[in-house]
Length: 254
Ligand SMILES: [Zn+2]
Image (tube, rainbow, N blue to C red; front, side, top):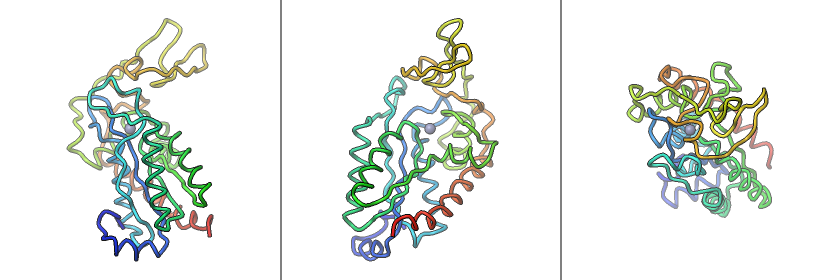
């Protein structure tokens, strides 16, 4: 059930059933020239909607957190970064409020890799308060479950396909640009947005995304090949996985 569609009395009754609390979380940030800034929260929000159709009596879905940790995308217009401290505060307060209403178990549906340190910190706080918080990075999960989606990047075909399935009006494939990665020196090349490659090894180098990915996207799969069918496949894989995980997850805490 969606918390936002319940009255306080309905919420009070429903929360007595001890549902697992689903927290969709993302970021408002650039996703290359072809995908809208809402990509990272629209996809987890859609996953939550799929779960709601499959198991509405067992879960309570709180409103999606649309902001995250994305300081490194700030040179791209429209990006909104609330920072590690901001996300930790917001997610932590959402979790502690729901715990005060009786929730013990949380599953975060995460759409943005930069959010991970904040989610991990809040998960520890929830743990120390007697609860348990799991998190799922949907793009990483689908890559583990199906090799066609392995090791996707940022704003590449994987995310673009997901967006074509979730919100096609927020994608324009005619705007796709080549990745054209930056080349810092003759012997150093771009491995990922914040990773460089040198003599067969990789080195982390955190800077603004524009330094290595001037068009905003980076990854092994060109977004111009994205399709809504592929997005639908991935989202079904992820939703079915979480649906199976939740009953097992319940067993971890009496
Ligand atoms: Zn993304």
